Length: 239
Image (cartoon, rainbow, N blue to C red):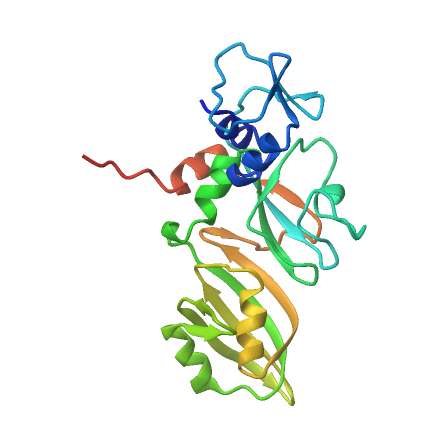
């Protein structure tokens, strides 16, 4: 398989991230530098990234993680902020996230050892909903929330249909239920800010069929292989 695909499948990075790693000259194949993502890896080849051997492809695995607020979803942060991956339980191995949650957000974050699986689960084509409970400050216009089902454009960015409803209101604060399929960067915060609402807490409670449930904050739990096989989107056959 192509080197970028191999790195993604090995959990080193997403496919796009793997291509960037290759282009930067950080990859060695059988002792020779690799600079082109179209380079092929065969059985028995030895691949190094930053001087470390990349393990052969393992079966795809998926974990549910209850991300606390105050962690960034990245392997390293130039600002020195604490990261999700530095705070995972020991022994988990090299994993990457399926999508992200920003610094202040909390709740369900899926982790996997397989970059190709991460990419597949992030695509809107899966039809999987990301569901959130959101605390906001401001005056909630329920008609404006309903109108989000048609999609909305904010600062030149088009967001797809969003399902949003009011759960409870207490004075100037309220809890909303929000669900969407795209998951663009800071989508919930930006769309609700467009409606004059300030998000003061954002909790992802589900990603597709996987639920946060009673998973304790900071805890990780592997999705059973049988459940993963049942839930993973299947490739459509063509021709």
